[in-house]
Length: 190
Image (cartoon, rainbow, N blue to C red):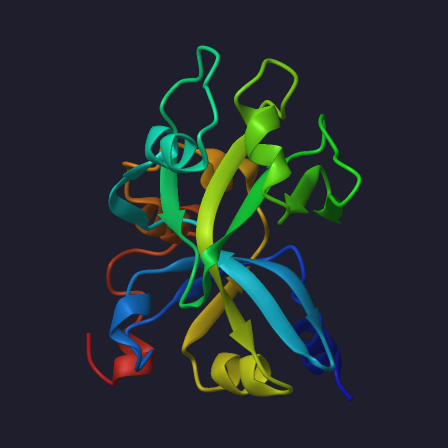
């Protein structure tokens, strides 16, 4: 197995940028933060697509939780799997008993109890709330990377937790030194 093979066999903590080659329309111009990736498959959350007309205040009202001065946080479309579950990426300055470090200072908590903590002043400083996640079966993600559906890039907290209303996908392309014609080789034309 070459070093390149090793690089795409464990992408945990990396960001995947979709390319124009991706066949799934809803993943067009998506960025996915990979929370886990091993020989059995992968799981991640889309970090740059907001769920229209849903925000943290809506979720709190539904759960009958009183917010204690919480800024109205956006809710992201995390992916088409487990769409009714809340996946929260957050800084590791707050860890619940079921939180796990993904990579560096980024943690993931799936338990809805963290929603109550986010409404208080003791919750994590940085947080990204996602409804649903993306799941790949064994070898599926590796095959999609090899087919040029995704470009794996290093994690960047500014991209993950940055302003959700900016074009994070374009910012990520600029970060890796690419321009709008970055995909000309993939498409066969400029």
